[in-house]
Length: 503
Length: 96
Image (cartoon, rainbow over all chains, first blue to last red):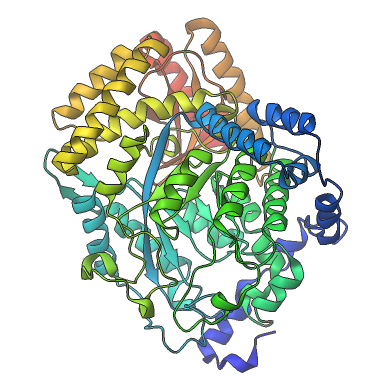
């Protein structure tokens, strides 16, 4: 039933009525229930208080063998109360990440295409009743302008395109914008820039609609559950709105895989409910996907913390705000619980926190981030709350972020190879679990970082980047001797201006 | 049907697994079958873990919708490679 308080237009009302397909929820239920049993999760958290150090060390070993943890094991990690043991967990989280993904960090940028939205989520500046927000939907020319700045001036190759849920930003609009982003080619200092992978953060869709996105060649389809706690979910997503349907959202990744989009991403917005419960919810989500799709779990996991947003008092009132200390714990526990998944830390977080959290198992981060609609080509310097979904914590540019990552010993990767050569779905899952994908990551990081250094780096960043490249080449020569000559061949071609070579 | 794949595609997968294993045994070449959707080449069947070789992937389009990815296509004798592509084209047209 459509929420009558929200004064929808007749077009909106009709569209809203057609979105949710009940049978595309019920088909996944077990005895009429979804896989989040709130009571059971709390029992698991409560039942694993004061875990023995030996038990925790056994769990760490399981993670190091890249196996998804059982709920009781994750609950035990969440209950560790010994600071020394937390240090071991933090260290193990970094080790798991290096084992699966080596020491590369992939960078990307969000591209917000539309903030029109029929929903009214209490924590979100895009919510329908927020009159402060300036509404805008980019035209396709404007999308191309945004992509030209991102690919040609900043040097991004990977985007996450973001859309509010609205008939004017439906699947056909999303598909058109994707094509527009992929269309762009811009001359750079030594070669050319292109957007090579566009991931999507959009509302849950039907299988038919997801097939449309699949056919355009989307990267990852990302839907955050926001909170896994049923009662909280209902309270903050008003009844009669599309987002008010918990099950429709929960099974969005299932439908995507059924539609043939075999890279899906999950996430929770930390600060809406107890952080330990949300970690358990993410684990259950990953496990249900694995169960249903022959071991195929989420490609990435996101763990944004609730940030202040214009005209949105809820963001200041929540009692579940996650402290920096707990944030580090939840990141490390997620890394150990779902060891194969990519983990994304974004510019929502302050620079210092990002620097402290990346070593705990993160694989991707954004930089030069603008989240206003049209914000890259409009070139405004200050954040404008009334056209953003929330306020960013870190507005540094990509060059600065890369320099810091290099100084911390990470190689920045712009790799988008996997989804263009069959390393998707259950294939990439196997490669991640056996450590093979990490080797591809290492090779492709060198090639794509070379491109970026030659095309976009400042002198200072280039200097620190060259040090990392030399170090990586030396490691590859020692660890992957059969790959080394082929890598050097591609590397030289890139130095001579060729682009987009990969393993 | 848990993964939404039709029976016909299951036949295609099984057939391809057999072919890929034969090629691997004979020439040490990894093959995987992919469905092409814009820039995306989504995995359908073939070797999951890959061998020890590292080569830039070779992508060969069978039809507008299907392709194979190989890590050493040049190691397959040319005449056999041509036959293989022809038979795979037929298979994806029939079952894909």
